[in-house]
Image 1 (cartoon, rainbow, N blue to C red):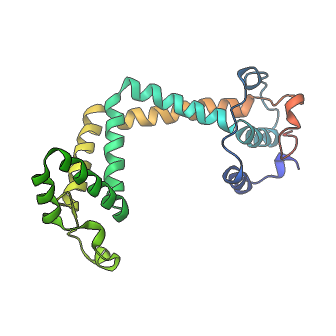
Image 2: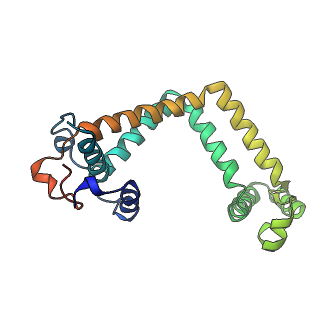
Image 3: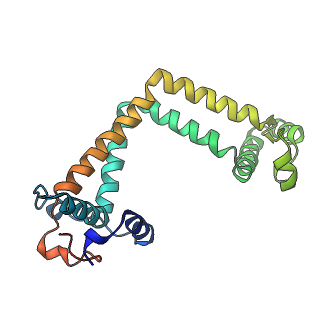
Amino acid sequence: MDWQNVTAEELLDALREVEWTVPPRPPNEFFAKFTPPKTLSKWQSRVKCNVYYYRANYVIILFISFAIAFYRNPYALLAVALSSLALLCLNDSFASALSDRTIRLIRKVNAPLAAKMRSAGGSFSSIPASSRRKSSGLYMIGVPRSFIVGGLASVSLIIIYLSSALTTIFAAFGISFSVILVHASCGVVTTTTRYKCPKGPMM
């Protein structure tokens, strides 16, 4: 089937179903040939085929871009981690597991403090699910969960503001997607490898 007839929805479905553990294409193939597409339809066909065929390479480009960005601004990584943790703590099962594991670790160092934390908030996992949905006073490590989430969110916002984390993240996205778009637009799957593309020829 010609890639020109493949819709964006079909491409997304194929990317969801395809095996992502396959190794990336070798550099000599990834950089083998570049030519600008002659028509809009050929450009669309080429981008679809390249996104599918070089998906692992494009993920690596994305990871490298973020690794360099976070290396240059490690506080941005800290801000992202704290923000993600705050969001995860809104999930009851994650909050329960994190609270119980933290109390177990504290118990190895200070058993009385761990007992005090557990008694202050009760057993998180023992609260019925229906009560969890109705209650806003759930506890983590003896502290209301809203305080934990609010504290993590506040600290992450401060770090984001002081470290220009948003600029770092947007720059990483922008650079990686620009590189991917250029390669997907101009990279040509060679005649040898074209027939390995399961959807058929790209042009």
